[in-house]
Each structure stands twice: as structure tokens, then as C-alpha cells.
Amino acid sequence: MLVGVEGLDDAGVYRLSEEAAIVQTVDFFTPIVNDPYWFGQIAAANAMSDIYAMGGTPKTAMNIVCFSPKKFGLEVMKEILKGGIEKIKEAKVVLLGGHSVEDEEIKYGLAVTGIIDPQKIIRNEGAQIGDLLVLTKPLGTGILSTGIKADLLTENEILSVSKAMAELNDKAQEAMITAGVHAATDVTGFGLVGHLKEMIKENLGVELYLDQIPVFDGVFELAKSGFIPGGLYRNRDYFKEHVLNFSKDRIICDIIFDPQTSGGLLFAIPEEKVDVLYEKAKALGIKTWIIGRFTEKNPGKILLL
Ligand code: CO
Ligand code: CO
Image 1 (spheres, rainbow, N blue to C red):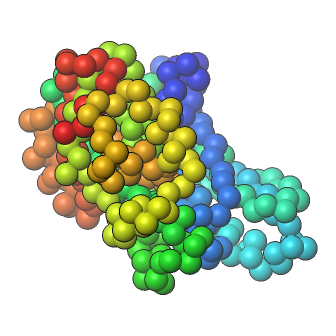
Image 2: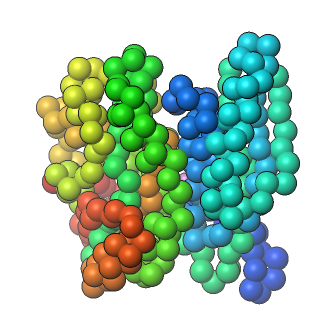
């Protein structure tokens, strides 16, 4: 075993030989959008993300389906699976099978196996003092899906956040590897702060540039009117003690705790590699935002600036 449960890394890694290791992960959840086809795409992209975060290449997948045909009709399940398969194909992954159970609450996701060079595993820790912190997707999907449930988003707003969540992190991975990444993770249920805490542990500090953090359209307005998911409060209660300069008057201070679905990669690169990152990201057609810097000061803490 090269990577197990102890370091809170995204996926597990098991060595097969000097040159080859397998990287494994599993993820599934309840619908966060109403359209079953988009839900399938998002769940599949989300499930493969941990492999990309660790620097692996996903190769095979198994469906995990919890569904009641009696309650929802088989057509809905077909649409979910169709969305999933589309993403699996896009990632050049092979679907080997799966398992379904009868469940009144829909859940879908994948168990994914990838390959990785044991010398090239990217962990959540390993950032160096002075490294820049980069994020590759805007924040706010938890708040937006609360808005979707309350029927407050337009079709266009739903479509644009669905597309972003369904986007694979394969290109983001390529960009970070090209730029010489020191550490990485993906932003999911624990929100930006929770996953950033995994990167610094008690060893490093990090400054977060609040005005540089990308946020989806409509998120500020929803948050201001109180459409905040329960998971955000739970993350805030749990991680707030590691945050310096928190201000309850600034909405962005809440958004950094928002639980994300299929969020972007969050990684550390040396400052001199920024140009390489930008160039690669541009060539791949993806966006990257520099949102902070790792510091020697305040070990274990996230300083909001
Ligand atoms: Co992860
Ligand atoms: Co995960």
C-alpha cells in the first residue's frame, strides 16, 4: 500500500510493481440537479475526479445505482446511466459492470480504478513555502443546488452550473502536472477550507486572497437571501477554528465553506511556474485562478486576506 486512509488523500494507491500502481476511489450521491441525464454526467465526473487529483489515469469503472423503478420509472434510470456512460467514454474509461439496489432515494456514482507511476503520485500534502495556490473551477455549487431545490434558478443558470460540474478534471490535471505541481486535491464536500486544511495539516500556513476566489453567477445573491445548504454550516462549525480573519459580515467568508459537487482541482505550484501554467491552461481551454500562497507563518491556519 502506497497511499491509504491515514493522510486523508483523495484515493488509495496500491503498488503492483516498481513501475506500476493502481489508484482506486468510489463516490456516489443523491441528485443535485433535476435532470437525470445531467445528474449522471455530474456523478460520473465527480467520481473520477479523485483519480485526477492524485495524478492518476482512470481506466475502468463500475456503476453504483440505488433506484426504485416503481417510484421513478425505468426511463429515468436509463437517462442517469446514459449521462454516466457519456462521461466515462469522454475520459476513455471502460465500464466493466456495476451493481444496483432497490432504493426509494436515488443515488448514483462509480467505483473507479486508474493507473499511476509510483514515483509520480501527487498527494494532498507536499506544498512548499512560497508556492501559489491554484483553483480550477468556481465555488458555489452547494448554494446553487439549494437554489435549484427552491426553484429559484433560470434554465440557463441551471445549465451553466450543470456543465461546470460535469466537466472532467483531466485537463486541469494536465495543466498542473505541466506546471510542476507539489501537492493537489479536489474541492468537494468539505468545501474550499476543508480541503485546503488537508493540504496544510499542522505544517504550513496559507493566505487566501478572498477577492481572487472565483464564484458562480448568482451565488452571492442566493447566499445573501439565506439559501445556504446545511453542509456549509457543518463545514463552517468544523473548520472555522483553523481560519484567521473570519468576518461574518462578508458573504465570501461563507462561500469558502460551501460543500462542492465535482469541484475543481486545488493545487500548489512554484511561483516561477505560473507562466507555464497559464500557457498550458490556455492551450487546453480551461481556466485557473491563483487564490493564495503557502506560508511559513501561522502553521495549520488559513489566513483570509
Ligand atoms: Co477528493
Ligand atoms: Co471523493
